[in-house]
Length: 80
Image (cartoon, rainbow, N blue to C red):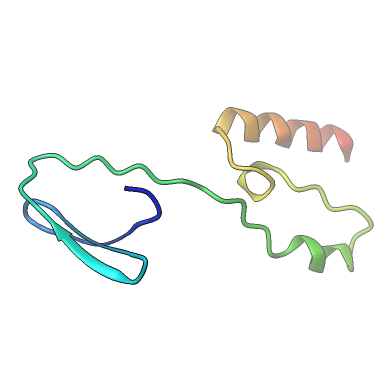
């Protein structure tokens, strides 16, 4: 089920909403939940007014693994 928002976990299922409709499903002993990540960076533009250069790393730039974020952080440190 993609693009659904989990509203509540029940004893044997889930209540979710999708396209404005609330749906309850049940009869399960196991539920697997996989979520996605979006970059979130509301401060970059504001900070550019105060600093000549702003370096964005990690999930603020592009979602990825911790290894990639650490690597990007190291590269940013060398750039400073």
